Image (tube, one colour):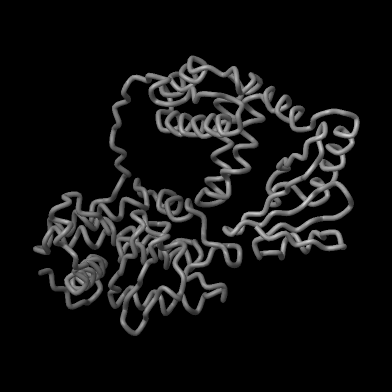
Length: 399
């Protein structure tokens, strides 16, 4: 890797803006330099003489350790080395007595950027803080045993099995980090180490309205005091049989108004595959009205804060407050049941409308069409059914 010498010291702005791979010396005589990898990662490295030998030691990532902090640590290391000490050995000694809570927080700093969103980043640590730290947070990460972890998970399973599963996953990640840092030689949270009894997974069925009640719910929503964007989002969600997150984060660049089509990108889909949604005439009307409410930040159904989607609880809370015992995700079930009981559309068309993946690998290998034209007829029929239930005059055709 090319070294880039300079008589000038680095600046915080230089650290942020430097993208070209290489080693950038800070100057000042401490041996500190910034290493920029080809992947874009930035790390602090110190070259230092320890007991007559030239050594290199890492001082952390530049996204976590500031320039000022790196300089301060480099200076302390040099002072210690000049007195005959070994800063590398001292660091290893300090790490060896990290508590589980301290190790978890350090692991979280590295793991957080790889998680899906801010909510998941906070949840990773909050679950540990609530259910692991009170039990063994103060114990050295090297001394936490499989028995400690097992008892915590089994006790939590009795009341919150899903949270227990997440706790297990997070402890595994922290212990994996500890192994990588040389603080442990094993991971005490693996499946083999814990030998947890098999947990019978009960399917979670979100409450849904019968399809005959959906139009009444839409009427109640439209007559409520909710803001207009929320009302439009709820009806649009019902008409498209889409998931709440897909609608709430929908942007105008995903919409083709002329072609009456909405294409959801792969990174916003549960199965990480792009999904085209045919828009009924009523769905297009909703989008035209929503356009007048645009906050010019790109979101079709903006939340209370500019540029931010509405909360994931906004729609479900509204439905429940209006007296409907249903979860907003349940409208997908309402649509699917309507298609099954009131139409002759083939099963695969209804499944494609919900963006469900064909589980049979052989069948999936040959089923390469998204059945878009057939789905367009289906979504128009669904819109017509809902309108007819509200007493609107429509040309309803259930095929």
